Amino acid sequence: MLLSRLLLVLFCTSTLVHAKTNPSWTTSIAPFRIADNLYYVGSQELASYLVVTPKGNILINASLATSPLQIRASVEKLGFRWTDIRILLNSQAHADHMAGAAEVIRETHAKNMVMDGDVSVVETGARADFLSPSPSIPTYTPVHVDRVLHDDDIVTLGGVTLTALKTAGHTRGCTTWTMRSHLPGEPAGTSRNIVIVGGTGFGSEYHFVATPNHPVSYPGIVQDFQHTFAVLRTLPCDVFLGAHGGYFDLLTKLEHYPQAGPPVFIDPAGYKDFVADAEKTFEQALAKQQAAATRKS
Ligand SMILES: [Zn+2]
Image (cartoon, rainbow, N blue to C red; front, side):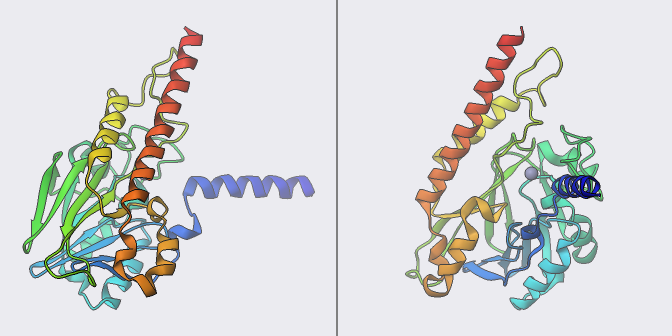
């Protein structure tokens, strides 16, 4: 009896991990303003951003299949119309940022713009992901890509410009979005560099070094990660944001938001630390895999 209960607990725990139903991913938080034309409309941990323009709005990250209802509630709570979303962008093609895309597109008719390396993943609902099939890569409803983005492409709408930087490795088309904008409460005429980091993490399934038993996850994955860190290291960043709230310590910053307002997200040091930590983690994992491969050969 005790054993079966233990097994049940173990089973459920691993199922939860694999299904990625971390409660913070689905816990609502009140939407808030970050810059004059940029709002947070995501959950506690899965970041979605609304960029507002006079010609309609841009949504970054549709998140989980269950997220659009929550995102819509946040957009409407801010006083914007759901159907005014003209363009859907994303940080990366994994289910936690893209599974809700089919519903968002169906309801808003937004144009779906995706970085080149992630197009086949999005159009197969993650079945073309280099880790698929895997319990850590949930599939989702495939969505058509209307515009294929390439590194350093710009997306413009209503006088607002976002730059798409290909920061691949985590996925082959992982995208870091940048824009410049004025922050409420700051002197008129000033603007800040805003960076929305796409993702730099990896799990035990990522193979950076070919071994007799396993090829690399995809050819060029190491070069992609190293390029990503080189890009992120030199990127000017005042306002530090990302695809996950945990990247930029969203919940802690939100505690200070009522007093500090949007400038609480100005955190160039936090950004530099995040990038340095991520690069160190990657280089250590790479060295470990290289050492293991050398021992085996
Ligand atoms: Zn991911």
